[in-house]
Length: 228
Image (cartoon, rainbow, N blue to C red; front, top):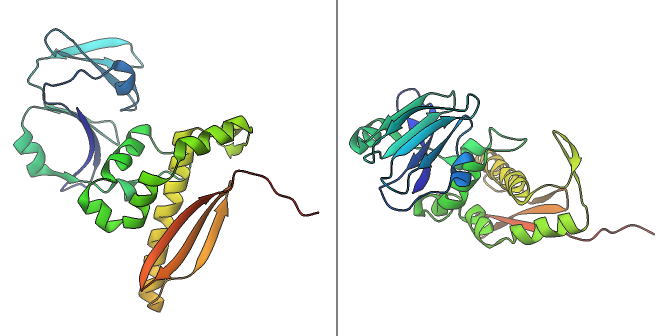
């Protein structure tokens, strides 16, 4: 089982893709988070895939066990195919880090999972080396636990509340990617990177230039301080 993000080569439409090769049985709660409008259940007996519509609570059809790809576009189009050659001929891997910039107020959980997965891919480790290192080494769960224990709150779309681990991850990786591209623009204009820091919600991103290369660091300050 694997989730990926693909981009249609002609229209550039982005697709969320759930792919399986007949091994392993995904749990329903995992798949519910994968797509915005539909979720999938797979029979333990014959690997049949049943597609439910969340809104209508009905079963449109059942697919056989040869299924390889279920694809849902950002505008809700559904593609189901067993033809892997057709998929790879007509689609290319999208850059989920760039896709994240479309969601300044919270990205879909499927996109966050893809970014975590792609942080281990050689192509993205080379392109976003500092960001990928932060993704893999920063203690996201520990930060979320401290937020919860100390009742630290953020101003969210549905009011002031304590952010979840996914929300903290989405916010800080969004800022890292945004700063990364801002720095690329700055470098193109000035032939150097702009050294500075950016703080919000107890997190600070420090930007430096080390041996001509961009350096990004994420710091978490868990305690409050005040001037006496």
